[in-house]
Length: 333
Ligand code: UT7
Image 1: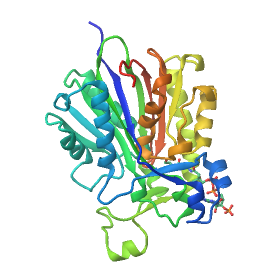
Image 2: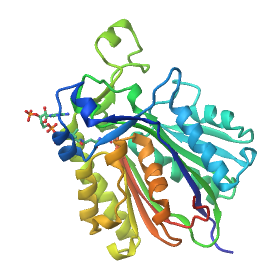
Image 3: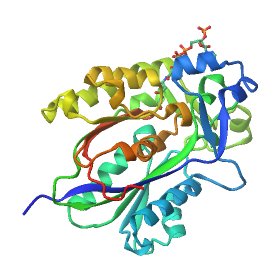
């Protein structure tokens, strides 16, 4: 009997309609289009506007589209994982809110907090349930409403992040499609450089924490950049080496969209040309857990059955990793 693998059999995404351009940011902080584009590659990002709308709103839209596209009934879903650092509330899990809203009455689920690597962590853990044979249809959502934790007076962070979510459906496959290998890593020492100071159990919300603007992303950009550029490139090269692959074997690099310069360095290290690198940072910025499924969604029409993809990411924690996938989707939009 062939080994059961976890194939991605559907992908869908959602980005909110409001476009925050570099020009608009020029009117908010001391920055300029030239700096933002040359240092990050970002031209615009999407922002979720509207009362009482959290990450679940975008996740629900993405999952609704996914179910419709793949002809899947909500009650067939066994499990739903949501990777996010901007849950609707500290508890319950945003995964539970999404599952309930879409009618996935037979699913269990939970959130994964692994920042920009969250989708990779979710993809790998969801796949284990498929590979074990215990679950047949697993949805992995990656999404963040970063605008809810961004300080729009801080020019070093507000130019980078945006809002968005994507979702994939995982199903068993016996023809060798889906997740083939993965490397996931983390190092809590990275918290020093990228974190949110207040709002957790160590420093609950108070008037003082609000006045001190401690509920926003704190990032030491240069330090994070150094770790990101080395680790994302290293792990991407390592997954190729341990599978005996050379650049010609890889159809696409699917990189986390944090900074175009980090993406270029990763591709260079792998020996992969720009024509094989998925890129949408220009229009969405860094949507944290949303970047990878949104890339797959944007580029789906260019993917062919059998293509080998390397998905890689680096983010808060620190967390990082790479996943090797053989594309075998049958539900192109
Ligand atoms: O996805 C989660 C993981 N996060 C990342 O991977 C982010 C990693 N870091 C980065 O992508 C980059 O460090 C940033 C994009 C955040 C910053 O780029 P940088 O090239 O590292 O800039 P820098 O922090 O070294 O700043 C260079 C200069 C500074 O001015 P001085 O001190 O040289 O006069 C900054 O004050 O650029 C200044 N600066 C800006 N200027 C115009 C910083 N932000 C801005 C801005 N507009 N928005």
